[in-house]
Structure formats: C-alpha cells, structure tokens
Amino acid sequence: MILINQIITDIRIESVNDLYKLKPFLEDGTLKINKSQIARELEVDRRTVDKYINGYTKPETRNCDDCITPFYDIITELLSDKNQQVFYYRKVLWQYLVDYHMKTVMDEARTEYYAGKVNNKFQQFADDYGFKVQPCIAGHPHTKAKVEAPMKILDEIRAYNGKLNYIELVELVTRINNRVNTQVNQGTGRIPLMYYNKEKAFLNSLPADNIRKPYQITTNTVKVNHSSMFNYKSCQYSVPPEYIDKIVSLQVYDGYIHVYCNTEFITIHQLSSKKLNYISEHYAAIARKSHIFRDEHIMDRAKENLETIGKIYDYE
Image 1 (cartoon, rainbow, N blue to C red):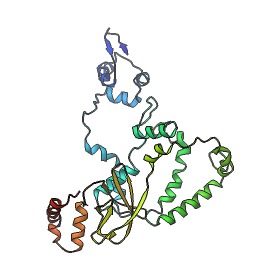
Image 2: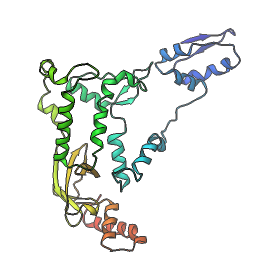
Image 3: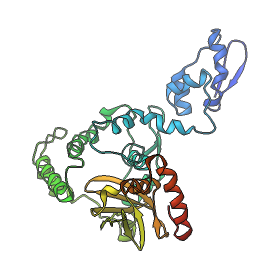
C-alpha cells in the first residue's frame, strides 16, 4: 500500500507496525487518509488502525497479569460470600476459569474487517464431526441470537449449582427439555418437537468410533479414604479432608483428573505414575484437621513432610 502526500513523499505501509509513520503528517494536516480503507486492506479493526497510528507497539512477551486482568470482575464474584461454590485452592479456581470463562472456540475474535482465528483444537473437532465454524462479529449479539437464547436455559440449570446430585440433575434437564421442545420457538415460530422427525432425516451420520472416542469423557466414581486420598489406576491422589468417606466423581481428559462431588468441582490433578500424589494445600488441611502441627508452622512442616515422603514415594 502506497500513500502519496503533497510533499512528494512515498509512505509504504506493509503492516500495522508501519502505521506510526502517518502520525506526523496527520498532525500537521499535510496528509489525509481513509482509515476504513486501511483497516480493510490490512484486515484489522479500524480502532486498531487508530491505535497503531498513535504509536502502539505490541509487546514481544505477554505479561502474565494480562491473562488474569480481563477476568478480575469474574474472580471477585467467584470469591465473594454470595457465590455458593467455595474455592479453597488457587488451582481449582484457575481450572474453573479455564473451563467456563476462557476462550475455547476463537483464539482471536472476528471483527468487521478481520475473519478472526479459530482455536486449532476446536477446528479439528469441527473437521472430525463435519461441520463448519462460522464466527460471529465480537460485540454483536444480534448476529447470533439463536446461540444466545439457549444461554437462558443454561442459566436456569446453573441456579441449581451444587444443590443437585447427578440423578436429580438429569431429571431437571429432562423436564426443561420436554418444556422447551413442546413450546413455540420465538425465533422460528414453530414447535421443535413437530419438526424433529422431518429434520433428523437430513442429519449426517456420526463419525466412526475411532474418531469419536478421543472426544468422549467418561465419569468414574470412587470413595475417598480416611487419608483423604482416592485411588485411580493404582495411584492415589489427594482431596480436601472434608471429602473423607464421600463418593466423588472423576473425569479424565487432556492429561488431567477433574474431581467433582455431585456437581461441585473440587480439584484437579495431573495424571501421574507416582504412587502418592499430594497437593500441598490438601496435606496442610489434613494436618490442621488432625492437629499435627501448630497453625503458624503448618505449611512449612507440611512441605518438609512431603519432601520426606517424596524420597520414598513420588508425590505431586
């Protein structure tokens, strides 16, 4: 792209990183540009053009704080007394954010002038199951009304978070499913159940078992022993001591064990071949409950004990 001003100066713009060259000429009024046209040609948002003209440079390394800052309000709400689910450990809170609030479909949002970037893992899922990803423009909920509407149903289900066991949860979802499918849909003006048999004839068959299997998440139930540990494939993993003698559910995927009690997310462990896998906060809580150490020394003594155990058994 070449912009020519009245001073017979060629300004070559190859990327957004070259836009700072325009600022001196814009300030003294010797150059007029069409920012919308530049945005279209560089495939970026017009606001990005303004930002780079004013001297913005993208940092080479991403500050870790930047990963958390956008979720500050969410974290504040999750840690408040109003939230029913209690997060005793940072690791559990982080996994909750990853599962429910961080990007899983789009790595970079679509804008008016940029197609966006689909997450590689999700794109592979779409390819395997034979559907096309069509991103909507960020900040334009009216472009995906049919997607936003069902979120009200999810909000209805989440209102029971931590209050239902799995059987009660299935019953709740069944009731909601029956209600929604027999009502007139506001978007289509039709009753979904009446069109089910007609529409299902046009659905593609599911992919082969060997393709589906990696996406399937199975749930196992185990009982927490008196040492506040549960057994998985001959290895033991820790949970907080308040779950001793309780039945917990395990979901294993992406190299991690996700632990739940009913619908409450408890903790997460990386899959390991080690015989004992303790999280230090769990061990400290167990020691505190059994009054092994004084509170002011409990974390230090817990770490010392874990180091000793680690010489005999590998621990997490």
